[in-house]
Amino acid sequence: MNPHVDPPKSVDDAVRAALQDVLELGSTVRDKATGDMFLELFSYQTGMTRPHQRILGNVARRLDLIGAVGRFVWMLRGDSALPPVAYYVPRAVSYSPDGLNLPGSNYGARIRRPQPGVDQLAGVIERLRQEPLSRQAATVVWNPLDAVRDPFDIPCAFGTLYHCRDDGVIGTTMMRSNKPSVMPVNFFEFSLLAELVAAELGRPLRRYLHYTGVLQVPERELDDAMSASQSSGESFEMDPMPTAPAPLDQAQSLAVFEERIRTCSNDPELKAVMAGAQEKLHPYWYAFCRVLSLQWLLHANEPDQALAEAEELPEYFAVPARETLIKRRAARR
Image (tube, rainbow, N blue to C red; front, side, top):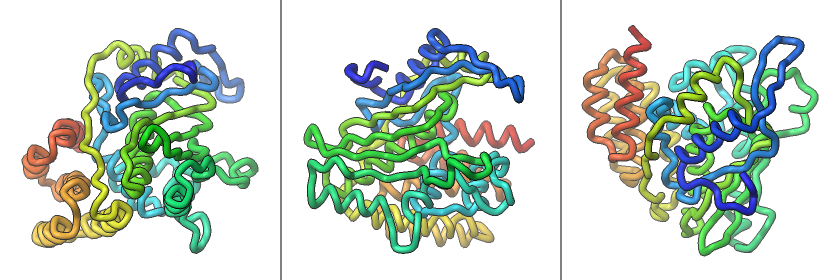
């Protein structure tokens, strides 16, 4: 995308445009070592002018809502441990060298706990409180060791930028590499992170920008990419994140309740945890807990109850949650 042109409106518009661009303009490259072929575009910029339209509705490639919410909450907690995210995203196991941790995909740990006592997200918020026009409000995901360590689970994200402009906040994510098939999850989690910064500042999130050094589609995904590039679907638009109670405190509480939900031993315990979450959390944040509880119900072999619970979610979560449950239930058979 030309940097002087406004980004697409929604995540659906962005993904369709990215697919069409790489399919039409991408160069064919073959890895001599593996024989793998892919299409790629360099220095690709996209984003959303309506950042609340962050839930993909493309009929050929719907967002796995449970996995996306699970990843986002794992990011909020600043965790590197594999089990909490693999519970929601089973394929994460394949990125772990030891079955215990994720050394590169742990964006939250790199942002919120890069070393003891350092929280880059809190630092960004405080910097913008003190100097709203600052150009120094940034978080770093990549670190120097990634350039020299064993190339296993090297982070795709380089970092994020936040600017107070246009009577709001503009959030930018910079990726070293990105696939359109993964872009919907990245848009979801990083635009929510940007809105968390904005809400803490009492400002709206005006735009989300997304830059990748190389946009890539592997040969094995070309047929799916072609189908998704031509498929219809309107993005689901989330409500704006409330500015009170304190968003960062609510996000921290959400991370605490996620662990309690995931480790429940029976249905009465789950109900008690959910009651506590409902009392503690604003309805906006409680809806994330309700999405997370759907995975517990699937693990407890209660798919019908999970589907019934999904119908009670806010509209922007209800449809993608229902479709995710149907797909996951089919995969378990």
